[in-house]
Length: 503
Image 1 (cartoon, rainbow, N blue to C red):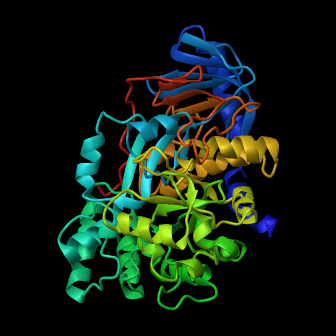
Image 2: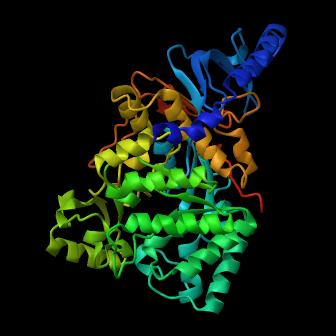
Image 3: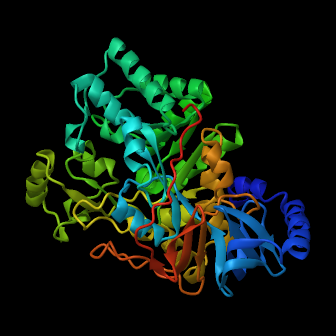
């Protein structure tokens, strides 16, 4: 099982010797011939440089110039600014495919967790052109979106854009002409730069299997991925294995259409079925289906109590949990049947109402974090109430501190691959900009995260979720510092739009 599960990472590093030789063949001549003549904007000297794609893991000096990596050398480099990073790790900036927080507060916490690119691909957004325009020259981190099936579907079926989960056209059935309109509007969003189609199937059970298949056909035709929060079986008649059933639907659609599918948060989707679902995904990949998945390093999920997830039958669909497994984030109290009914009514009425859902087996989290091909993604929420899930502030540092250093369930280069090159490669075909991200290589974008492997750790908790992580010392986005000497840099907005190739 482990040998097969490591195939993608092994493929990425199979040219390790050739790549390192190539890197050195550039770095030595550049260092010896030009080091004294060329001045870089900033030089990071003496750090442990890890590039997960080539397998480079050695002490090097890194020169940054004009927003790109201009040198990786064992020899001295001259810079306008030279920073000694001995004892620190110089890594590609972390890429979060699943970040609902897309504002300054969310970006501030994400930057201090080592993230340089934060994308909203699960739920997505709509209209696409407005979302990109609103962030132009105003973003700390690189940003991008999928086009939201939930938003488009509600607009077509009900005539308005939903402002909360309770306003989604959850159980509405699309008639043939309405479905054609949904597909047309989704395609228009792709032409405006969306990075794929975001499906929140658990939140819209009215979207039947035929509708989802048509969406996969559209994605395959346009050459974009489908990013999916899977349904959890059939709400009216949940099966004993709802997650396995729902993932089988997605794998079958991808196999039949040739579409790329990315399945969100495998642990909170599969729960007790996580091992079986991971095996299903592994086997599908081995047989040529282009399917990937992700996980965050926490044993609790979170969402709006007013969403369709909590329609009758939720206890069984969520793995047999009860009211006391839900925590109302505003107060920290465990729910009872009575308080559940009160708070759910308020949430359906439009009030912000997130709950922490203690439903994920710790063994499932361990399996996903250790797996070589499962991407790390936060699923971080917008900071509406200020008391959200800590995953939006601490996911990446938590993996590095608790799972790499303390528990040693995976090695550092593999952990970094799951945060950098693997998510970059998921998007390279649809967004060519990603070919220069997730790498410490000559010519790559200077999206760089430098951390202390001895102290990096998450500090956010469920009751104090907005605490920034520790041990992230420097973060650059396009060559601009957003974290310096362990402190967030105020007033800089170097983030660039990541757009799909159809734009």
